[in-house]
Amino acid sequence: MAENETPQPKQPQMRVLGQFIRDMSFENIMAQKGAPADVQPDVQVQVNLDAKKRPGESQYETAIKLNITSKAKDGDATLFVLEIDYVGIFQVENVPEEQMHPYLLIECPRMIFPFLRRIVSDVTRDGGFPPLNLENIDFLSLYRNEVARRQAENPPKADA
Image 1: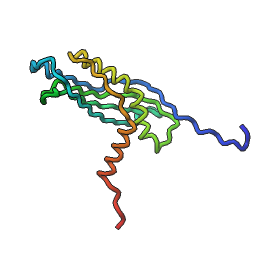
Image 2: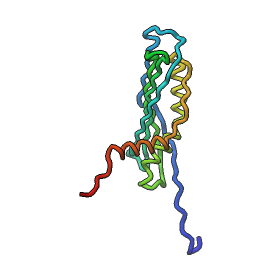
Image 3: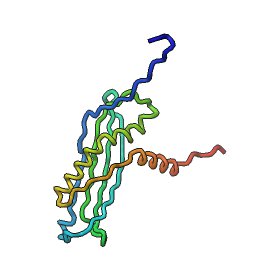
Image 4: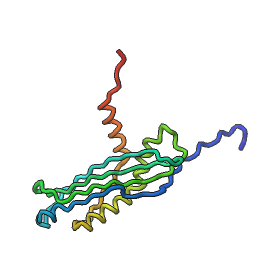
C-alpha cells in the first residue's frame, strides 16, 4: 500500500448461526365450532421485531413475532389464529455501533423471513386451510414507522 492511500473500511459481515421457533400456537377455531368450510377469509397480520446482544463475541439475536388472525369476510367469525416467535442468531461484524440497531431490525429479519414464510405456509396447510403465503415484509418501512411512532410518543422537550 502506498503511503498516501487510506485503508478501506471493512465491509459489514453477517452470518446466520442458527434459527429456530421459540414459541408457536395454531388454533383452528373453525373446526372447533363446526363452521362451514366455504367461507372467504380475511387475514390480518401483525409483525413485531426484537433484537438483543448475546453473550458470544459479535453475536446477536433477532426475533420476528407474527400474530395472524383469519376471520370470515361476511361476518366476524374467527377461522384460525397463528402466533409464532421465530428467532435468528447472527454473527455481525464491522457494523458501527450507531448502525447496529437498524441493522439488527432490518437486515437480519430480511435474512430469516423466507424460512418463517415457509413455516407459516406449512402450518396453515397442515391445519386444514389453504397455505397462507405471506407477502414480503418491508422491514425498512416497519423500522422507520416504529422510530416515528416512538418520537411522536416522546417528543423532545424544549429548553425552558
